[in-house]
Length: 383
Image 1 (cartoon, one colour):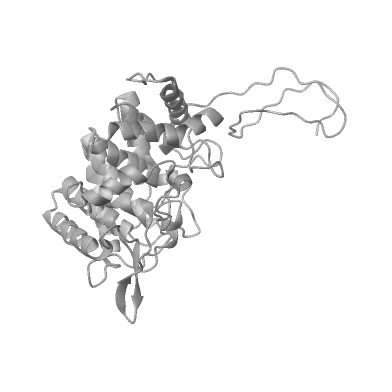
Image 2 (cartoon, one colour):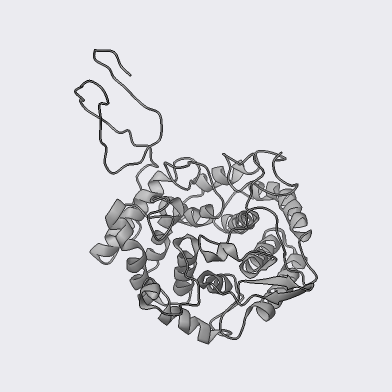
């Protein structure tokens, strides 16, 4: 609400937009020189050249997504929230090292999670799912604390600060003690407290009692503890749990997402999601040698157009975060480069052409500029 005259206005809110429209609700005005001040990471140069115009557009969108979400700490998106979320950070940290050649931003991100000795709203030993901007209502994602440990191990291999890794040890020991309290008679985590998150799909509805993707992630967490702190017991425990997951979860064709208690006994539900299969290969419950038939199905029958083709309708489809990313990472590791290129265009070209950024979901119902999505660059750099 302005009185007559000439005014120079500035707003501090962080916006993202493709178009800007002004409206005078009452009266009239003339608007001169609207300016948007960009708030981004300094420019970076791609260490590779995409092979086609389509891949170039995707790469450009991934770079802009990174620049807007790596200004200080790694963030989810530059408008809805600017907090530093775990799990997302695992992916964007790889991109940051690729584009900058250093771990300065990742160091700053990881230091934040040691800022407080104790979080009043969280159970003893648990890390916040997002910091800064941790939730004071008691909400937390137990799986995100596991991703933190896995990221820390990769950080050490990227040349991260030894002292920071040492400072994390007592906190990680407390975290492992916390998780031990949820291990059942099989050694599997059961009925974890908090917001149990596998991915933005039906998989999040299959976390009651024992969730097998979460236990696959738990095994990877234990292996990271073993690597970080020379803990042979953690490695042996990871192997035991993974053996149990394989025995209980695999139904002969696909991995089942969860098991529930019936008359006190743990019984697999038979519910199967696409992302559960990717967790299995990403974390080592399955390999190309042990589950070759399943891998063939995933490579040949699944992908960007699977739902449109009506293939395997009984398997709940994956979403962008994080199933499609795990899929492409697995295909990259196993050398399916042509399939990766086809999938990259199928999953991301429409995003790049629509907004010039990459999205949180396969649809535009949530963030259309999500930091982890810049991970496309990590694959393109290896093709």
